[in-house]
Amino acid sequence: MPARFLPLADVAEILSISSAQAYALVRSGDLPAIKVGGRGQWRVETTELESYIQRMYSQTRALVERGGLDEAAEAASADGLERG
Image 1 (cartoon, rainbow, N blue to C red):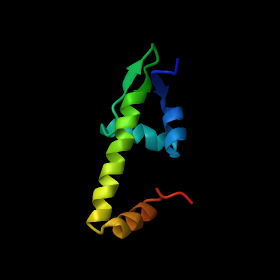
Image 2: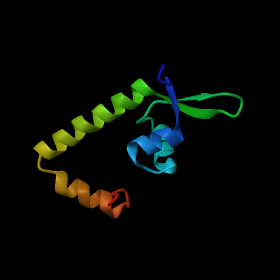
Image 3: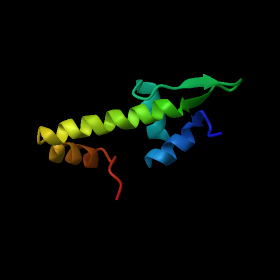
């Protein structure tokens, strides 16, 4: 049976982002998560991660349709978010 909850390190690996960026997604509320255990470690439900990915596809599609992809790519590059 696949895991229902993922640690932030796994979320970061799946999204190809840093652990700090995954934590920022959780802290901002963009990616719903829960704290579990005595040390309060963050866990993301796999269904929430899939929902987040689908939302990002929708937002990207809307951005492309508006012709704003170039500006978004430039902003991401300036923020150091783009990976080569």
